[in-house]
Image (tube, one colour):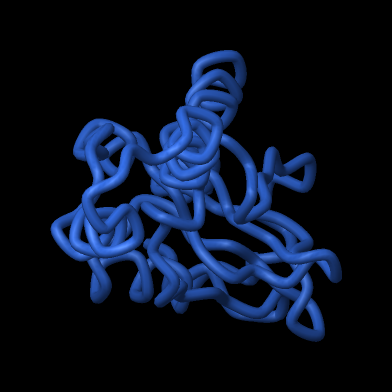
Length: 154
C-alpha cells in the first residue's frame, strides 16, 4: 500500500520528539517514557545528532550491579582498603546513565525518504521506530503506528 504513496519521512514524522542525552539518568529516561507514552527515546549529542536509542527493553534488562570488569577495577583500586562511600556513590550513579544501556548502532532515515523506504527500514532491521534526520540532525521520529495510520488514511 505504501509503494504508491507520495508521502515522505518528513510528512509522516512526529516533530515534537522527546530525547535524552548520554548522561541522562536511567530513572529520568524511564519517567520521560512513561509520561509521554513512548517505548523508546533517541539519544542525542549537543548538536542534536542521534548517537543512540534507549528503549523500554533496555531499561528492563538493566542491572544495578557493577559489571565483572568494573568490580575487578574497584577491587584493584582498593588493594585491601575500604573505598570511600562517596566514591562508591559516584561510581554507582555513573552506572545509572543512559550511555551505559543505549544502542549506539542507530538506523536513521533522511526526511526525504519515501514512506515505502521507511517501512522497509523498520521491517529489515526489526525496529519499532526510526529517527528522521536532516543533515545528520534529528528532526522527527516515525513509529510503526505512524505508518499504519498513513496506510489507513490512503
